[in-house]
Length: 513
Image 1 (spheres, rainbow, N blue to C red):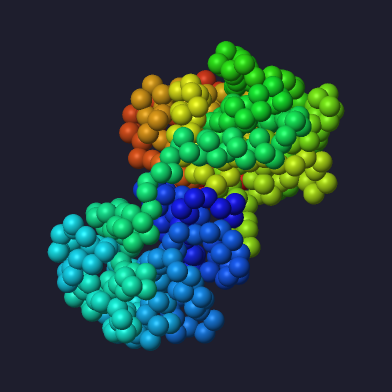
Image 2: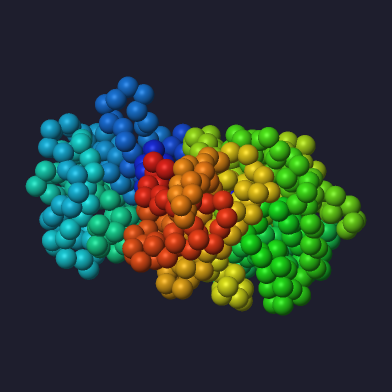
């Protein structure tokens, strides 16, 4: 949770798979939004100065033992509250309505009958399609509420008490399967909360620049630069705030893609007048990774070594006090918080050493990837940086399953280069969230010419996504898959097999480690 923004809408998370999506949709309405846990202390919530609350859906039934409840004070803050799915049930139950397990579940697309426009349905059709996903239903609204919509199975599919600033819907307006969902969200934000759509990328930049200047003063700063959109945007944003107080450090770990180090130095040096230090640290990183096979140990080892390199560089610049990182919101979630189990430690979050000497500046930590790209474009970053596909901070180390060796790095670099070349050749690069090669540390039998081979497989991974929180495997054309497979097997020594990963996230992750 960050410092208060003007007109912040807080999404109170009750364990919904869509909590992130609700926050994104609010932001798409040009209103700033953050997610808070359902048991956030009241005083902490007040300190964020919300202009509105949204109670998310969740997997629980209000009748389950230990099911999360709404804190009664949340409904009496004097700011509008919107309950969604589980949120409407919490609101109804807390205020004296009736919630029942009727046995008539609703899952999927449903026809909604609007009984009264009220606030949420202003200027919208009286019949519309919505997306439902619930077992319990509100069968009677609390006193003082008007029932504004129903479905065949939900007598109270929407209800409002404008005088109390309370609104609720049983369906999910945040999903694309509710075609008019964004209009309903806008009615809540603009009409109920009386918020103007002023949260733009320009305002994000202005706020970040002011905060950085106030915090840093005249201190020296270094920035870990990878050449990707996250670290590049963070670097240019901080440079806008403090100018020559910033020095960017590009660390060649030996775990980059083929030709990447030269490309980053040339591209960044060409477009920006920012101090840049290039550190060739390949030998020390590979030495630290000798014999390491556990992916969490890999990530933490690499994270620690990055910091040690930055600390050494900092001594050359009057012991720089601050370290800039391009940390994003999904990095925070996946690395584990009190309310989110650790999926994997990102080298710039869960992989940081406890004895780190720097204070972190992470101006993008509240943003999703598409928002960072928008900020990058606003700052004038070139297209090749803004639209570069995400690349993990630990580099190819987490795309080599098992021990990282020079031989395996070289094989994977060559295979990955072919993947990117063919994806770009097919004009699919910007359509995909990521496309890359993976090298499992195993060998399989094959035949080349008249001889037996015992060589590595390469796994191709290509996914579509909006923010990396979820992802679907990309349906690449067969001819593209065939070209990639043929080229890798023919051009990369030590490979005799290519497979395609057709799993989505969840249950898989995008990266293999």
